[in-house]
Image (cartoon, rainbow, N blue to C red):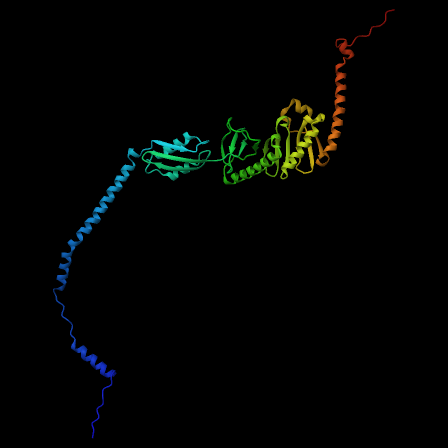
Length: 367
């Protein structure tokens, strides 16, 4: 009979576990040397000198940095960097003396090297006429200032009677000088208070004024106007120039060029009448109908302070001005004849004047 041999299965769990237990029983932990800790500490102590060069380098860098900082502070405050000259460019209307004095005052505290250029620029832009100020250093002892000045746009007549230039940002710049070019007419009604809301209102007034100036200059009417009141931009009023300087034209809120032209036509037609020299205003706020106001003759001659009060008002339609002008011419001729006859009567001496101003006595006849 043959003997049967049963082979052991590979991967048998019991066999693998027994083998693992057998191998584990054969291993023993190594015995740590008791003197290993002491040897490691000594080894570390012997390695400390290798770090000394690095520590010395870091310390040296810190010392050098401190010396450089101290030297910088000392050098920046030294007399070597004290302000000695200020260069200004672009100062056509701005005061160069004011610019230089402000820069010297600010830089004297810190020296040129440590001067706060941004702060100096901000302070310069608060001066009249200066819109933008660019400040730079010119080492060792100089400051250069480049200016961009504001552009004057109109002349404002203030409540005190001063004539000041104003720019697009509604900033009052300075007095109008005799050498300045005379504007076509002035702006009246400026609010001289401070604040953002007031500035916005003034910018609206300036915008309306520039619109009037553009339209009237294109139409050739600006020479007839002395100043324009824009206190209320919806009630624009123009004061005429020359011989008509006492006359105000009320234009309302629109069609300023057409209304001014119509008002001047009405005025020229009434100038040919005896009452022409007593005209106080021409009101065209209603558009087509012109209202002409007259001063009383007595006030116009003897009391100039009462020129605003009117005693007579007449209405004229702007559509029938030619017919009106003809009637005015006939009325002017009739008035001239009446005035001539009146002068003759006044020139003829009366009976009382011929007798020396005394009335002669009647005498009774003698018997």
